[in-house]
Length: 225
Image 1 (tube, rainbow, N blue to C red):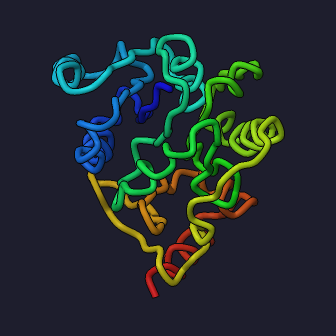
Image 2: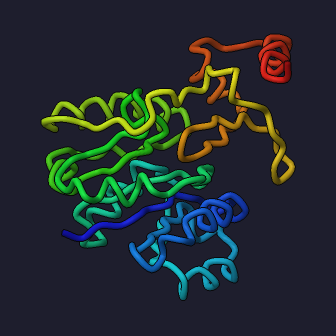
């Protein structure tokens, strides 16, 4: 059973990807770590070359985001099951990753919302049963997120949930934070933190409606209190 970890980034994601990879450093001797770089031709070549000795690097010509990464892993590696993380994830306690691999042939969703942010332990056997769509835009990727996750779940006999309290609406633990010159919402989990972009597409996803500029500022204030 070939098991591993996959981090998904893009040509402009260097800082975020390095932060995510650093949080996985303690697992490098135990599990292979793959980094899928979308839009790789436009990435900093020096950065990519610096990753190659340290990780299994997969370069993708287009920007097909998480679903493209899933497809690449099936087509270009021999991993049977793997955890997938966006580059905006920072692992604070990696024990859940190791423990999940004791349960081979069982998929895990980090969140109770099935494969929210595509975070989960995916299985090759199940993914091969699905024609994986390739999103063309960020909105496409957001739209596919739960539909694809729920369809994948329907093909499994069961899905383990890691952190049932993980939720972007939890104002008691989540907070706004500026990193790399960008303000983001940090969603705090038991084992990881997810830094959510406040771009309009993500605001629609989180609030399910399009907000005005004034409403977005009011939304931010609700996290600052």
